Image (cartoon, rainbow, N blue to C red):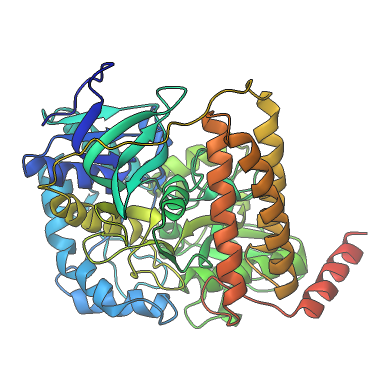
Length: 531
């Protein structure tokens, strides 16, 4: 059965419905199509850059013939919380997936040096193993992948379209309701694969693209699917500290850049001679971890925030790089220029929400706890990342699990079932309504569920978020605007984070608890210093 254009008498159907167009969704669609299935890929994106995969900078981790070494690094970076069996799946299938789907199929041209791949070093990796294209790997991977997929006869891509609800009956998912109709247009599918990306819109600042509202996680949870490890929200340590933050790839530190605080009275010259280094204060990472700037992300992010609080700022000193920054990382140099930053003076950085390590709980083929519902990519919890993700493993995980889910989600006939139509009976709300609620959501999530948490703050967040969800639910009962549903989804995800954080009283990885009294004293001290 092919994805069909619906009529009044014939609803839209597909063998496999994929929701999301990042690398995980594309891999799933390709794998299902290769097995002869007719695939409908639905995406909110209207351009490739709307997907988080397109924003990926550093690259994609490979095994370089030593899967056990990569496995060890993943587990170490995860604070020992990664599922070893899930990591085995990742490393055992990594080389074939990268070669088949990225190098052979769309012909991604990764950077080379002397006719060999130029493998990069990144934080918490024990060796150079990152395939990359400048510091813009995501767009060089995703865009040719999408172009290839668009040419596959049995794949239909429906852009600028959101899934609002899953169609479920007796524990089985039969597709989804789309926002192409005010009352929700049903798509009945033999299997449904969620690949909806991250949750950045829950936070005041994020490295995710706009629209990262946790849609897949919320829809799956509301349909009854299990979620896990939602407390583990990773913050990237080096986002440019500007009004609209942009990521400064881990690869920059892998090439030798160092972090300095704003204590300009320090006489430290580590990282180069005095004339060789950019202006700035003291190098501090060696005091926090033996691996210094190449420590796991959660360690570096907290250290950066500590130094910002103590000295007023942190900069990334790129002067120790062997090549000039603009030559080694031209895309990042351009981004700095766009924001009036001269890298020679040091690039101001701060931690920024980056990646959710938890999500919809899945097995080694992306199967959720609901029949014929799969999840892949950042919205899925595979067990690979544990309490903290290793750099440049997200594209690899999305690729491997996308292929496995796409192959597994085949052979099921779509079944048209009775379903509850959405209600769109009340007048549309002012455009500012969702924006104001989102502002409230982001303020509480960023303040109480961010890089450092307290038990009191978590409890406060739970109360505020439950009340907010009650308000949002009252409006979504009779309105179907995408903005309202995105707000609902973000609120559900925020509650899941808060509940998971409340249930975990151990500081580990990205979930870092500080004593309530200590946090109050620190806040008072910061306010006093600001005076």
